[in-house]
Amino acid sequence: MIHEKLIRTHLEANGFAHYQPTIKYNDSDRDILHAEFRSLEPDEFAPPGVRRFRRYGNGIIIPWAEKEEVFWIPPVTNGNVCRAGYDQGGNNPDHQNIRYFNALSDLCKASRILQQLVLDDFSHTFWQHSGQEFPIYFGVHFVKIEAHGRDDLGISSPNCFHQDGEPFTFAHLVHRSSSTDGGVNYIGRPSVRNLPLEEVQHSDLVAQFVLRDFLESFAVFDPAVCHYVDPVRKTIGDDAVAERCIILIDFSQTRQNI
Image 1 (cartoon, rainbow, N blue to C red):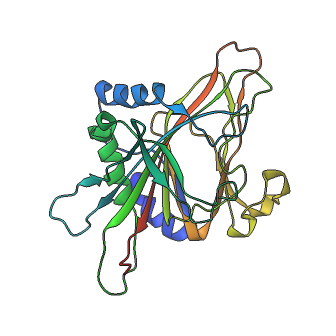
Image 2 (cartoon, rainbow, N blue to C red):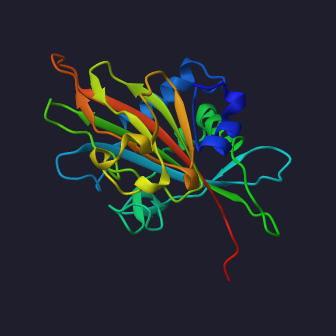
């Protein structure tokens, strides 16, 4: 892992950074995140038999504002269920169109720890502007993956090396149970986009690591690399459920559209 002060340097030079954030938090902050993960609804877009749970929220940041602040976009309500829409613009081979996920709770979105994470991540991004500057759009995914039996595979989407479409994505681990195998993160060259791990040459792998500690993180600069996380599996000889809880935060430029 690298020091947090070097994140932007590593993103610019290598396309990724593996690090531990230094934001301040207390037990109450942690409890809010854990409670949100316990409340996640099943991901209706997960393959049959895959135990994946998800919520999503999105908003904007005004880079030129005197005070750093996040502004959440209100979710839509459908049958008394609040949902927020996520569209990868064709960068996910599993899902080519917009997906509406259950929305993050208001309590979680208002929490100090999540707002700190969003603003801290944003501080490591870099942008080119041709003309007028516009707000920055961000999306926040809470994703939990479980495996209850040794033959279960907790699959992430997409299940291959990919680029997200957003220029920057940050991943923060919240929980990984001691009964969990797999969940290895791989960073690859852009040429391995859409390939499964078994078809990727070792020379095309830039890095691999496992997130284990609370808020242990990595970031990618999307044009420079591909990334992949292999399925979560249950440890042999352990009766507990395998579980991996991760927060994904991505950033994109907005633009005028008339």
